[in-house]
Image 1 (cartoon, protein in one colour):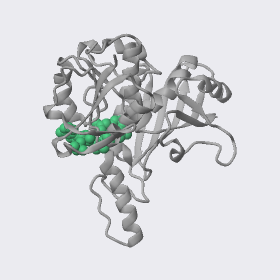
Image 2 (cartoon, protein in one colour):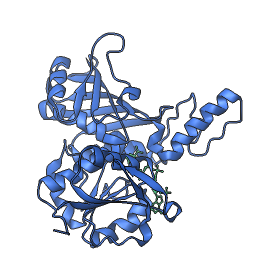
Image 3 (spheres, protein in one colour):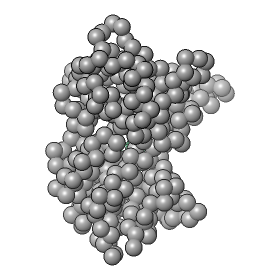
Image 4 (cartoon, protein in one colour):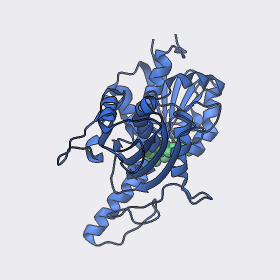
Length: 342
Ligand SMILES: NC(=O)c1ccc[n+]([C@@H]2O[C@H](COP(=O)([O-])OP(=O)(O)OC[C@H]3O[C@@H](n4cnc5c(N)ncnc54)[C@H](OP(=O)(O)O)[C@@H]3O)[C@@H](O)[C@H]2O)c1
């Protein structure tokens, strides 16, 4: 007998990708239920070769559902995840609502799989922010080898990270430029077409944005609280795929060649690093792929034991939907949940 899985937010960017990934990976589900707001009730979403009719989250009974993959935003998750968890359904949440809660494990399976055991405290597991997920997949094997002291990361984040409205805004503004229509900025604070915006999420008191703070708080929670992290998060006019320029200072010696070898063997990582035209990965090529791609690995001669690298991944997959499905697989493979209908 397989599991009953609900996708809350199934009409969104991440929810639709969750449905694709469950189907692609042959996830052991007997039944998959698509949920969204009352606005979407009765609309249809694809799941493999099937079509699912979307149900209303507000009126859905979770008592015989085993796993809820939640990607309906922070407010919805704050309201619904504890209620769903109390019905014995494990919530794997994509929003930032629970990531910093001490009783909720924040998991990237390649990085801190053992922390998952704490999920029983609330029946909620958090998925990290998209830019952090790909970053820690690349940092973890290097930290194990040479102990990271400090990381400086600059992100180049695609518009799909801001949901389907973000993608529509880039499309509509680009079209408006070509037909000389007025440009409307609603989702982003400035025009995103043919521009970049150094502002993601709200400003905090110290002048950093919440997105930048998330990268450091989540890296510390999952990898090592002793690592110092600083970040500049930038939105760029790319539909899918986040890129990151990462500068790392290590406690111990590590060469670019050693880092390349370690990352070649590391789970979830793919090294593409040739010193020639096109010998690196760009977000366009990573869309629809599962790996975290690492290119441009170089020694930084301005510090002791320093490296620079370029890290790219599909934000809707490793940054959200794929990681959530991998967490569900981890729960099942470790025997931490049993299907209710058995
Ligand atoms: N995009 C990324 O790269 C990424 C990465 C990591 C985490 N996340 C997180 O994942 C979540 C979803 O992101 P997204 O990019 O998929 O957003 P999205 O494309 O805007 O989709 C939002 C989804 O939430 C549903 N929803 C909204 N209000 C609801 C309500 N009151 N009750 C039930 N469902 C509701 C929407 O349903 P309707 O169609 O009915 O409105 C839709 O299915 C967010 O928390 C986001 O922060 C996103």
